[in-house]
Image 1 (cartoon, helix red, strand yellow):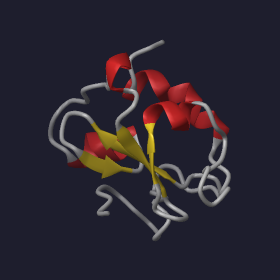
Image 2: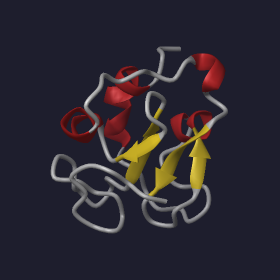
Image 3: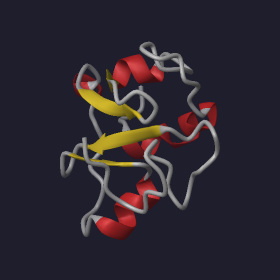
Amino acid sequence: MKVYGSVVDNETRCTHYHTKKDIVAIKFNCCNRYYPCYKCHEEHAGHTIQRWSQQQFDERAILCGSCRQELTIREYMNTISCPCCQASFNERCALHYSIYFEPV
């Protein structure tokens, strides 16, 4: 699975977010491409972000950078670690949900 943007390692960390827990890439609804964060999308995509609607929350649009498992948006929003490999996700990413996903 290709991840676009300013990626700095093979676990999807980028120049903007690169802590141990920053291992999630998000498939953007507008272009169907994975980026590590909204800043990478803004810098590299050339178009505005189109958020995922609540009706699309069962789409596989989250990539675990540790094991490469694709999660649904709903699975991702209801966990703090990958259900496949148990790698911890950055819980502060929830602060940016409204950029990626229609508010619940």
